Image (cartoon, rainbow, N blue to C red):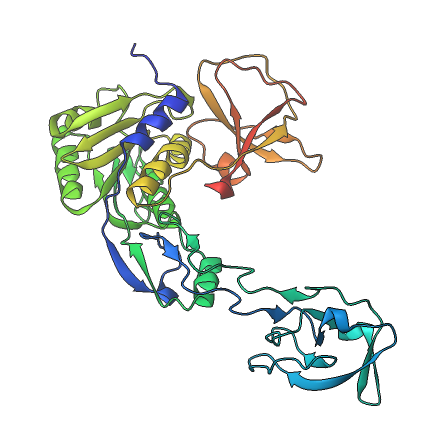
Length: 397
């Protein structure tokens, strides 16, 4: 029996071996949401460009303030207009977002004032810089605001619009090939014969790839023969940046993927110490990264979340990172330990404890659809009621 590669070592191997597989191009900002930034964005202007008022109120010179003193209003400053320098001893009516007039160093909100015979009395002591948003408070000119490798979000679109950016340099979408194998699998829509099951892994993998922001260039299914497997892989190698497969990577007589991989390229790792998802193959086929996931649906899901997502992320130019976890106390116990890292499908109860789904079979997808995430139990670790373990919400993947 071959030695199983530790979970963390497998993650490290896949991440370190990956490289960017796509070219960059310029894209209008309005079309860039969800794309991966290829070059740092450096601010060319200050945001805000000038000191401005955080409130509707009155701008004045703080040292002019005296208790009970009535100030003449020397000008009115709406947002978007250029003010005149403030006359000493006077105040300016000012509105939220309007530029502070030269000489003024304080804004008192209108709720703390009284207007008497067209003059203003301030009921609050004036303090320097009070209610003033300084120039560059949000962004300084020359500051890197988004680094290459980040996925552009709606917040980024707003941020870059505030800088006047109209185009960004992004990576082209990663073209991913999806391959499923198995004579027992038939497409949805056909009638099942004895011994057959519907192909769920192909549609699920394609959906996972699309959900991660990549392009499914081709999705193929191969019969359980070396010839069919090789032909499908060669087709995908010619048109895809990365290839994912499901099934055919175990040790059965009908599992041909590994042998074909060794014929077409180099196999880097095989078999990971995790549950579910032990049979996993990472290879390179004429420069094209390949990841062969196990055929059981839950194993496919787990290995996509942890390994394929990481490979695709790095290959697309994105800063590849592991999902965030937080510690959750277990609402159950188990004395039995296993020699593999285990990812239990769990939900968080109203009491804040994690409860394992009753069905943890590698062939069951309903458990994942009825759960909220994974509870990571490290190899050789018992589960103690009330003890904390890392919880990874599905939304984090």
